[in-house]
Amino acid sequence: MQYIKIKNAIKEQIQSGQLAAGTKLPSERKLSESFKTTRVTLRESLSLLEADGLIYREDRRGWFIAHQALRINLSVPFAFSSVAKAQGRSTMTELDFADSVMGNKESTQYLSLPPFTEVFTFGRIHYLDGKAVMYAEHYVRADRVPNLLQYPLDGDLSSLYREHWQLNTASCQYSVRSSTFDDEIASKIKATMGAPALRISKVNIDEAGIAQEYVVEHWRHNAVTLDMAVAFTAL
Amino acid sequence: MQYIKIKNAIKEQIQSGQLAAGTKLPSERKLSESFKTTRVTLRESLSLLEADGLIYREDRRGWFIAHQALRINLSVPFAFSSVAKAQGRSTMTELDFADSVMGNKESTQYLSLPPFTEVFTFGRIHYLDGKAVMYAEHYVRADRVPNLLQYPLDGDLSSLYREHWQLNTASCQYSVRSSTFDDEIASKIKATMGAPALRISKVNIDEAGIAQEYVVEHWRHNAVTLDMAVAFTAL
DNA sequence: TAGTGGTCTAGACCACAGG
DNA sequence: CTGTGGTCTAGACCACTAC
Image 1 (cartoon, each protein chain N blue to C red):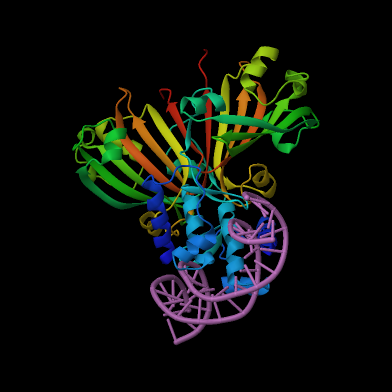
Image 2: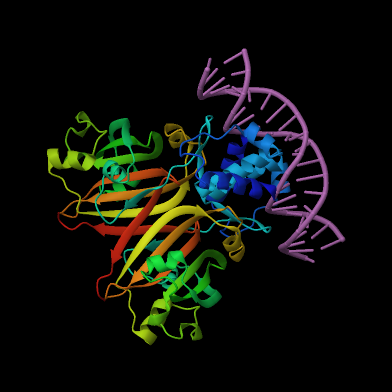
């Protein structure tokens, strides 16, 4: 099981702090040579480290030392950028597309809308320390946010909703599961198809109990740790 | 990219409902032959399907069609067995080990204990529909549950704590992240080392706000989906 | 243009599972 | 004992990245 040994050797190098996050590893050919093995075996080690979250890859660009995971506390309302800033990380958000469409099955279901209702949908790419770590698909009830698409969609959305339409999120419903990147999303965040991902879906509900936005976030699996506090009401 | 095509072919077979959950796939050699490729490429496809959660493997036994994920709602107190039963699934819990030790760094930290405090620790293997899906490590303040180790530890723990020591969990702190199985845990649940996993850590806190138990759950990544509802107090 | 990662082939040996 | 999955070798070609 030399691929285990290789994995551990690389792991030690990383954890000893020799290598800064974001550093590119040597090429697979060089690594396989220095470990006296073949690329196939070496890639086995790299895949393990990727699954472990210690390294990640950018499609056709190579392997890089992973950054520390961002910690997100789901128990409080949060904006990606402010959470990151509080942890000393830099962020950027990029609008991928925006459109007005007939709601699909998922969005109408989560937003409790009748079929064929208009929804605004848009996709955003989120960067952490210069690296794309998450892709978010948004679905918003069109009747609640008229002309949404005329506003800038690459900033803090909750502020936008509040300022222009007096909408606040009073509660959220989350669903979290492990998944992988499909072809389309992988290419948007320069990941490889099939790479491990964390899928977080979120329904934002206003004070009146009406679901107004449905978001599906696709995270590079090692980029985030979710925290939450739950208080049980007396039974 | 034939491994994509093979992946999709197998995926279709599974999703068309031809194959029941838990069914073993044909051997890798047979599959690679019928897809006219090599085992290396075929295993690439299988790995993708594993990451996708459609199949899983048991070490050296082969590949199996995955069951549907268990949905767990973290917002309410729950027992593994009752949640599963409500979803029509059968469960079993097995005690792996139980011991009294000096708390390690992690457990003393999460339980807010001074160093060198005694804690009870035990491990449990959780089965869903006959398959091992999760391994849980428990750390409990010894002073709160005297003689804990003399009681049966393969049942519902919250009932046990309540009946014998009048302990209730009033709130929980969760932390969720993607990870992989290490050698030890993999072998306990017959997974393979490095297979994708979901790591859920939980601190149970009583009515007085004292942390009494720290639990780390290691889930086969496709075996569970986490739901939660969060209400934000007015700001 | 040179080198890289992504993909693929055609074998091989071993330890373990299951009969 | 047979067949299986786990591991490994020594190549190869292509499309893309980085220069």
